[in-house]
Length: 175
Image 1 (tube, rainbow, N blue to C red):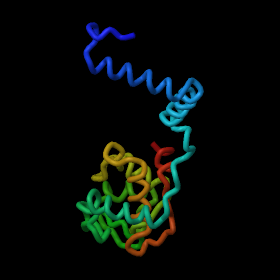
Image 2: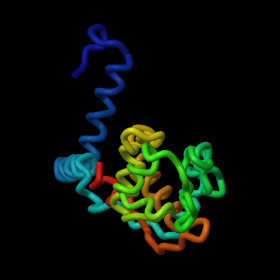
Image 3: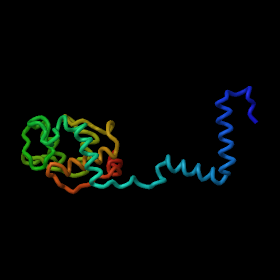
Image 4: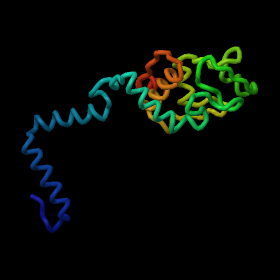
């Protein structure tokens, strides 16, 4: 039994509460509860992240794009000539080689026109930026689901229509 003169009242309450829970649930339920808590925090309880629909990703991606990316690439995805590349495939982009070379190396620019490039390179560019360019990393600002949404949006907006649907698990693997 707890001696009230040795402990503050909140410690007595919390200890009494713990005993009531243990008594009510019993040892089997307490063990099951402990296992469930451990599985939840280890990430193994629900398996992989739930798959998001293209519609969900596009809606969230548009919002994130407009808040985070449109300042440079514009809401229309057309960028700023010679400074920030458009994100619309097939659109001409002329700029200094220090801007076009990193794009070409990643499959985003060819023969003076913007290309979609691979999904993997797109995720990489959003996560880690493009060195020696104006594209900085968003890995510290956006979580896996947000990056998946914005990449899905960019690959399917403005007539790109790639059909690509990027899931948070793909971004998690690329981190």
